[in-house]
Image 1 (cartoon, rainbow, N blue to C red):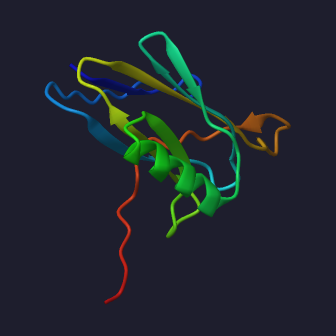
Image 2 (cartoon, helix red, strand yellow):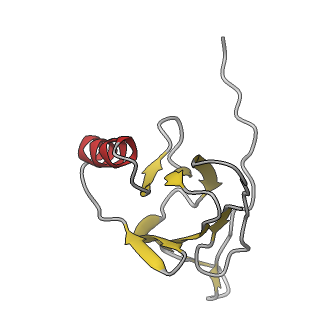
Length: 132
């Protein structure tokens, strides 16, 4: 049984299960438009894969090459249509493997009129409509 957990700091986990074969996981999450990723890791049955920041095309090539070679790989990137959505990919998760993805985000907190700070945690993707 495969388990996929998306666990950015203090956000509830999401699970995806597959029992039979290698799976390719793609997960889209909403983030504050001003947020920056400082950490992305995958923990797979006691093993850790740590992502490294690199130019988009180079990162996509490293991910694609690793998946084609049968290795488990991770990729995080900003959605091409919206800067407030991240796409997380986990390629070649073997059957029976438990995986937990950890995403670290940093962002500026907004100062309220009373001097406090505000933080809004997006929890779902709004429907996006495009004209034909």
